[in-house]
Image (tube, rainbow, N blue to C red; front, top):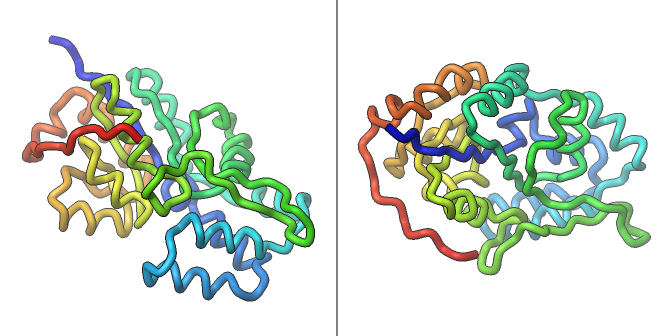
Length: 235
C-alpha cells in the first residue's frame, strides 16, 4: 500500500522557540509607541504586517546588541531530534513564521538547523534615522499578515501531499483551517477545538516526536473524523 506523503509547516515564535523573539526585543529595545501598535493589532484595527513594520522601526539597538540578545534565546530542546526523525520518515519541514528571518537563522544556526526552508519577514538595516526596517517577501494580496501562511499551505498541498501544521497562536488560525492535521499549542488548541479541525494538543516537541510516526502511518488521522478541505487557491 502506498504511504501518503506529508509536508510539515512549523511556526517558530512560541512553537520552536521558547519565547516570542519580537516581544523580547521590544521589551528590551523598543522605543515608546510599540505598545499602542500592539493594542491596535489585538483590537483588529491593523494587521500583523503593519504592526510589526511599525514596531521594528521603533527598535533602538545596534547589530551587536541584537546578536547578543539572540544568542541568549533558546529553542525547544526536542526540536533537533524532531527534525532528524522527520527527515528519516521523508516528511519535509518548512518553517513558516510571521517573525524575523535574521533572528530565526541566528538562533537555529547555534543548533546546526539554519538550512531549514523558511518563510518569514525580512529584517534589514533601516534608512536613518531608523535603525531597522521590515519587509515581507511572503505576503499575499488581501492578507494582512507579513507571512501569508495560507499561501504556504497551498504551496505545500499543490503536489497532492497531506499537510501537518505545528503552531501555537493567532498567526496560525487561518492556516489551521486549510491543513489536514494540526499539532497545537496554547491558543491554537481552542481554535482547533471550536472550528472542528483535526488536531492533537502538544506541550512541545517531545510530544510531536512521539506522535509523528502515528500520523504518517495513518493511525492518528483515522482517530479523527474526516472533513472536506477547501479547494487549493493560487496565491
